[in-house]
Amino acid sequence: MRARRYVTIAWAAGLAACGGGGASSPGSPTDPGGGGGGGGARFANLTVSPASGTVTVGGSFQVTATPVDASGAAVSGLAAPRFESSDASRATVNAGGLVTGVAAGAVTIRAILTAEGLTDTATAALTVSPTTPPPPPTATFTTLSISPDAGAVAVDGTLQLTATPRDQNGAAMAGLPAATFTTSIAGIATVSAAGLVRGVSAGAATITASLTSGGVTRTATASLTVTAPALPTTASVQALRGGFSPSSVTIAVGGTVTWTMADDDHTVTFTGNAPAGGSIPRTEEGSTVSRTFATAGVYGYRCSRHDETGTVEVKAQTTTPTNPVFTSLTLSPSTGSVQVGSTLTLTATPRDQLGSAMAGLGAPQFSTSSASIATVSAAGVVTGVAAGTATITATLASGGTTRTATATITVTTTAPPPPPPPDNPSTATVSTPGESFSPQTVTIAAGGSVTWNISGATHNVTFSGAAPTGGNIPDTRAGSATRTFPAAGTFSYQCTRHSGMTGQVVVR
Image 1 (cartoon, rainbow, N blue to C red):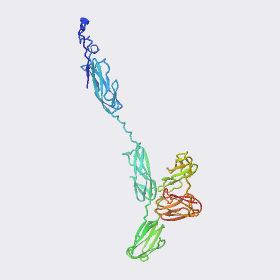
Image 2: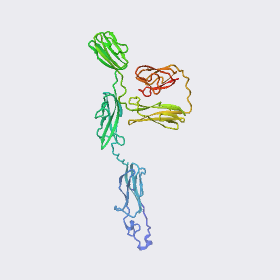
Image 3: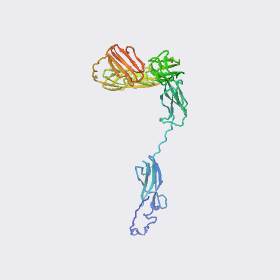
Image 4: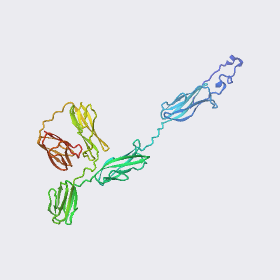
């Protein structure tokens, strides 16, 4: 687009009279209204170069404006043109025609020049483009991850592991060679070239994945627990004249075997150990009789009428791996309250992959989040300093594995109200609903006794300090056990098979 403005100069009609015959006529070489530069070419219009282009946001672009005569030749000696931007929010332009991109879009740059009575405008159409982002950095093989990094599989069961190479940003990488897998103990677990793990026997093993690419080797490990298959709790036997079928069955302790007299009257006469209820006398054809086996062992039997024989093998369930691995750390109690100036002892317990307590791993280290509220000794004894709440952290490192556990401790300035006077009964009973002792605390008189009725799962009662007469109660699946407490004191205990399953007996 071009705009042009002309200025007309009227010469006085009597100019010649004033100057005499020596005056020149308009248009002559000496005419003061003639071409610019004392007789040179006159300014006809303004051109810009380039007439269009592209500039990036933050980049620059030079636009040049040139005055020319009617023949298109440049005219010199004129004032500099001025420049304008149609949209300064997209691009700006300085007095010299240097354009700077501000935001993406289209913009028009105008050059304007007034000279020799003429004003002309020329334009350049520019496009402002977004800044081109720098290319992403080249991915570098930095780490190798394995998933899952811990798991459990039964004997003869399988578990698929996946090894993933990752770059410096943690993103998965493709196109690298396949990882190789190895096992620490082939007698517990094997692993294929594709990462498929198979359980061989109960215990713990470490599976290692390794990958080399570009001269760099990275490894990752997965902790694996192989569990023994669960033993059945029931079995059925057909009593036949040709023999018992099957002739041998295996069940877990507490399991039941049922005999069906299939084709005649039969007996089940135990030749050695016998279950509760003893031998089964002659029983009519078509009838069934069951016996429950509470004790591990091999029970041989025969039919006294037909001389068929059979055996029942009763085994305890295998729950503890042959190779326990330090997997977690628990802190007891996990919450507590202590008065300013008083103390509370915390107990840190390392546990294996099945949650069982482990011994021989060394002492944990204790730290406090606020020593101005509560301090903690190397033995886990917390001392209240000022009212408030502090977090106590226990840390234990063993075999290259570090685990932590925390307890929230509230420090008070006033003593809690005293408990109501105890009844001091001579007996108390504790049950095991779920994975807890109920009630968690019982109070008895010195010389009294506590009976634990265990049901639902296998539990034990393991005292953390002084134990009563008879000591700890071993693993029991179903049954009762009683302990007598001849002296006053507080007896804390736990089930080592289930994390957080604790209780105490207060003897007054």
